[in-house]
Length: 334
Ligand code: SF4
Image (tube, rainbow, N blue to C red):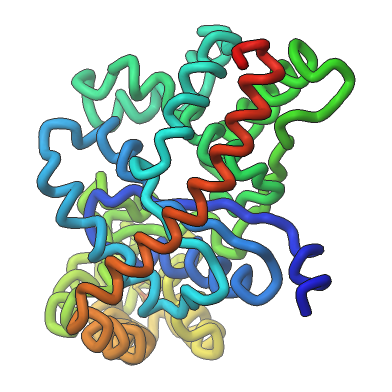
């Protein structure tokens, strides 16, 4: 048992506590995390420092979202006995590594990461801070401090990972003396990399277009009713194009068996958007019901969640301290 556990690859992933978990997280990351609990040695980070890059003016919301997010993780099936759940800010070694790697990271590498410009365009100039520019480097430090080998990512994060791999190669080249001090992480694309939100853009807390696990059934149905569909299907009997419709994209996740029927009847004009959304809302609520029930149960005992985070953070910190020591020794700092 112990031998096979040692061979398991170390996987690192995390989420920012900036609000409640949504359907995109569930199918884009959490379902993959659940599988990692069975096949890997996973480290799951409550990325509270990252949350400050966009929500720095609202620290209380970050604090409030922290435990809520872990409750969602557990409700989605993450087994705390089979992974390490920890708080980023409780591991100061991550921040120290960030400073050290910052010394060897060319500014131009950070400026060319696509999300730097695109996110400022989406969210506004106020997030154009030193911390936000360094976000991909801090992400790398999250991974490198645990010598993470695999990182589940969405397509939009692949550029961050490639940047991180370049920094690791540079570090090992400058200080490794032929040895690999830091590990180059590999990205693993999730099965459903892009989940559309109610407005058709990528589902995201920042865009206010998300369907939350913690929403009640009425709120879910209301959000589904507000979803955009094929803009050319104006009347009920107009022929639709499912391939451009976010409702159709979500059907594929929630009830794949029903997809051929929707496809056929949307294209023929037999199915109207109002009816389809009503059917979809019912199906989605059924899909989320067991998770919501588990969520309500776990939320009854806040100390249970606190304990999981404390124990995980202590374990994570011991590993992080060793990596940081190796890095400082390689840099002749100790
Ligand atoms: S019928 Fe359904 S799949 Fe077709 S456009 Fe309307 S909501 Fe989308």
